[in-house]
Image 1 (cartoon, helix red, strand yellow):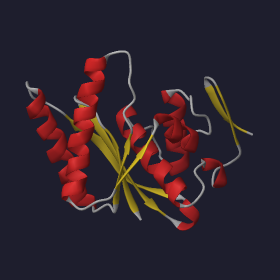
Image 2 (spheres, rainbow, N blue to C red; image 1 turned 60 degrees about the vertical axis):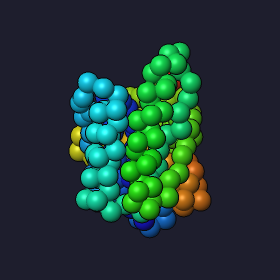
Image 3 (cartoon, rainbow, N blue to C red; image 1 turned 180 degrees about the vertical axis):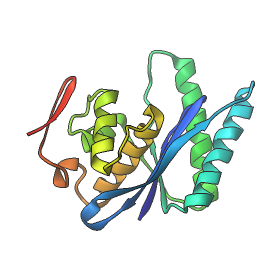
Length: 177
């Protein structure tokens, strides 16, 4: 199964694509960012929609996975994020892709083993789990984390410990035992 993970944003939308290999192990395909330009929100949303549609056309994923919106301190930012998220979801739906959603807590728990992990911990584990030679940009790493989360949930696990070395996750540090 080819999984497209999306980390939506009104300025930068990250994407990450993994193939689900044997026993739910994710294999890296591609990742990157759609840089959103435009003066109006409508123009920026069109860039998100068109960018995600182009990625779908190029890589032919079988499912789109996206993080659920959470209410942050700034309501205006949350609304813009929700609109960018909707543009990405519509691009997937226009290509007849099913859409799965996970909370940030679920994604971090599946990738790091700790639901309140820091962004650097997520980037580190995405790199380790996919065997990448470098650390992906933050938005791309978050999108890959969404895809990895779905791969593990689809395989019936939900947590990375099924296929990775035994991990110890605490605030500020992820280590291998």
